[in-house]
Length: 542
Image (cartoon, rainbow, N blue to C red; front, side, top):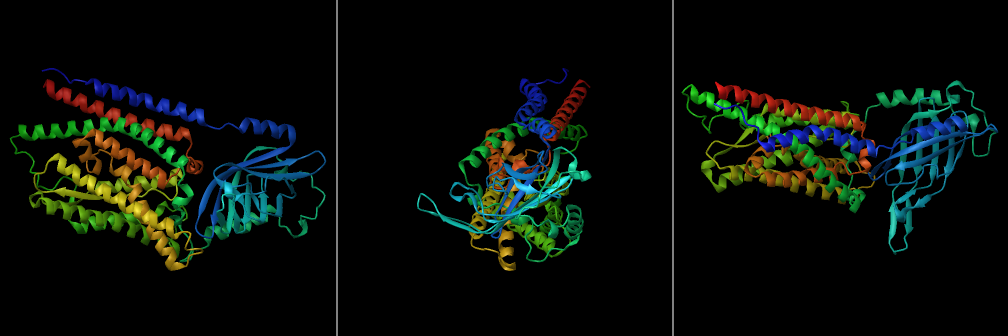
């Protein structure tokens, strides 16, 4: 008999999959900013010290904005130093120092500054005090922003609640005068009070242990409160970025997934051929699938395990009051979005045709996706994080067509999207209403946030066309429908949870790490496909 055939479509997918990492890396490297060389040159010639990093605006109504900033400490020949903080990426927030160079001495600059910018143009900062504390390794910048209310040219009134803009910037380049104490000390000015200002090293020593050991209270906001409402991201730019990202990611993920799907089909067919060769009857569709536990108790237990593991997406998670509240919120989100979705799909499918005999199938191996989602959130730095609770699904003990099976998967995916969207709408409406929320209001907001996150963050994983996931049934029924559905799921995920491009500035992984991760995924898919093809060829020749 002839050896294995390599369809042209498969060979094309392999070639594209192997070339995709290089293409992805070249695009990413072309987008990388490269200000370091210019900063270093300035530092050598002008006595400049540069710090860069992320900052966050946190308002009293729960609104948060992530930005990137640069601190430039410049010491002139006349023994005077200044500190200037500018925003290098992100929306809404203006310069914490009002684009002014403040007097800087003994590692510190401080001033009371007026309102700056234009709230009507969505780039402003309220009146308040700013402090800059610098050490050789990092600089802590804090700016208070008072409430703002003003009339805009179009007749509307723009308002903003009180907020704090803060962040720790990392040393990039420049002279080392801060580390050895040789920076010139400027003549004291009326705006500075050096005698009452603590040096930066004692300040760091007293703050860090308090932050590390202080337990959060019941009404302290947690990671679920970082979900951004619609009014902060509902812009045409964010929508365009989400659509573009959905198309690109869908293509990049689908390419190696085609190979994994072909590998899975080939292994399954080979196992069935061996079963028939031994004279065994074909597998009974009503039998329990391998590595599966039937029934609601096992599924709910797995759901609670997934909720418990998902609490670690909070980078500040601890067994304190806020940590338990976060765990309860995620568990509530899973129960509403996933468990209720199972019940609805089961009831609908049973009402359509009872002989399909729908049932709940818990798949313990899907807990690996839970761990992967948590690890991804921790390593990448995405907030409010990615959680996955779809550890079970609706199976069928009776014979059912591919179309009907795909319909049940589409029904569950649609339920998750609708529930998540409704929760996000409620969250977006309540955030401006609950100014400085109390415990009950915070519980309501975080429960809605948990439902939103549970509904949108699980779909990009659940719709992968792998055995045991929702996307498998849709993929087998229609590749075209799967591509469209997956693009919608990824687009919604990006728009709601990781609005681009601002959220990318807080991602801790660089482009090289993303390229390596995708390359590893492609290599694993190609190797698995090649091994399965070789195995099929050897069995065919025998």
